[in-house]
Each structure stands twice: as C-alpha cells, then as structure tokens.
Image 1: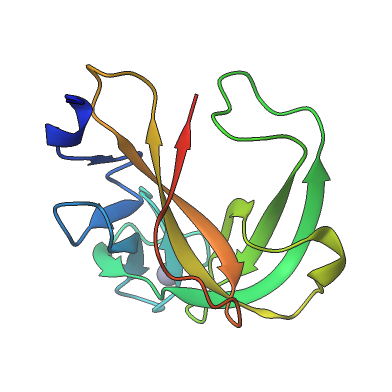
Image 2 (image 1 turned 180 degrees about the horizontal axis):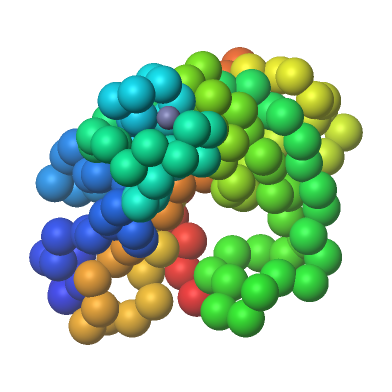
Length: 153
Ligand SMILES: [Zn+2]
C-alpha cells in the first residue's frame, strides 16, 4: 500500500494557486486588484504595476486565457519534474496579467499564438513521504482531456 496517497496535496505556490478541492483536482489562480485603477497582477504584489498605488486587494483570476507567446524549452531548470523539451507558454488572462506555465496536451505544431487555453492542474509527487504538489499548467481549450495528470520523478 502506497503511503503518499494518504497525504493531501499542497499548492506549489499558495500565493498564486489556491486549491479548491482537497484532492487538488480544482484550483484558482490568484492575484491582486488595484483599488485605484482596477488593474490586476498575478500573484503577490506590493504596489500596482500600472499606477503604483499600494491599495491592492486579493482577487481570483480566470481559469482560461489566450496563448500570447510560447517557447520550446530544451534545457529545463534544475529540479524540473517533467519531461524535456517542453512548451513554456505565456498566457494573457482576460483580467490582463500574463501567466507563464508549461503547455501540456498539445504538440508544438498544434500551437498557435492566439488560441484559447485553459488551466490544467498537475500533481507532482517527488517522494513517498512528501506531500504531492499541485502545479498549474495550460492546455488548449479544445483539448478534451480534463482529468488530472500525474507526474513522477
Ligand atoms: Zn493601479
């Protein structure tokens, strides 16, 4: 019997991803909204990047966006838990912020600037005694698979 299945997964970055299900199958990207100019940022911020106001409030961000740019990463950063090469996508959310994450479920030739993408959560398990981490990825919106994928290293 595997022990790590009993450990509840945790967000890879609680300031950027809130888990909405105990098993990590649902989550929301987090950011902040400026109370003065309504601009959004992804993750934590001390001041607004648009107007420099420090009056910011926490805000939930959309689970979908458009592929603004992407690049093929052939040499991953050290500790990268996935396969290489992989696609690193820059996605523009409807609220404005850009979110960098791996694009999964698509081949390089299927990708085009401007396509709709949606948030995909992936469970990364690095050891039997460690809590699995939930990481956020992007996947084409027309991609049928919705079940969470698992990665091991
Ligand atoms: Zn502002």
